[in-house]
Length: 125
Image 1 (cartoon, rainbow, N blue to C red):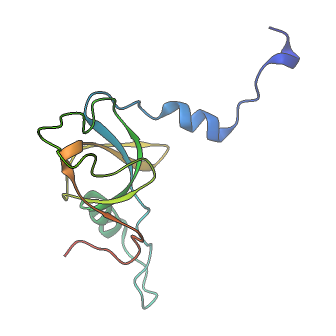
Image 2: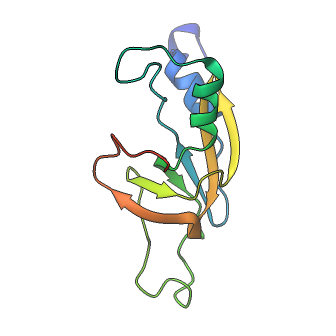
């Protein structure tokens, strides 16, 4: 392939290629970045931010594995969510990993507890 015909690789395309493809009944979730300061303007410690990230209950569905919600006996009403939905999941659920400092999770399809239209303001109680 000539040099002119080579696709241009961008930072975004490199990051996208590094995200795993969920298999089976797994769902790939992106977690929102925690706020770096409290409402009053006080800056949160790195430990506090890390704890909020670890216990996060809200995320966005990026991709679903091919077997998600395929069992009609377990999911008679169909899928709980779809790509692009903001969901509420169990705290500390799934396999946690980071790509270039951004946290993601792979969760089971039955870990989705709700879909929310606007996740802002939702925090673990």
